[in-house]
Image (tube, rainbow, N blue to C red; front, side):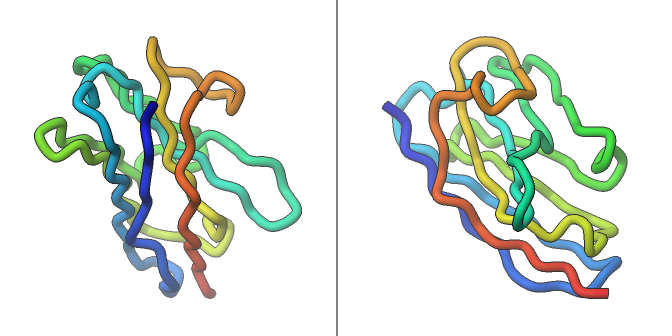
Length: 123
C-alpha cells in the first residue's frame, strides 16, 4: 500500500511557475512509476507526466512538453512537478499517482492516488 500526499498548489498569473511535491509512504518508492494527472472542472482526468521506476525515463503530455518537468528524489520518497510558463488552461486539480511496472498514460493503469492539489492560473 502506498499513500501519496501532494503539496505546492496555489494561484499564479500566466507565465509564472509553481512546483508541486508528492510525498509517498513506504520503503520501496524506487520500485514505483510515479505520475501526475490533472482534472479541470467539467473535464476528464488527463495524463500530465510520468517518471519510470529505476530510472526508467520521463514522459509528458504534448500540452506540457517543454514547460513542465517531472523529477524524483528516491532518498526522500518524493516526486516533483516543476511547472513553468503556466497558462490559464493549466488550471486544474493536480493528482499524484503511482504504479508498479512501466509508465502509462491512462488513469486505469495507476494504482494509488493522492487527494489532489489545486492549481489556478489567471490571465
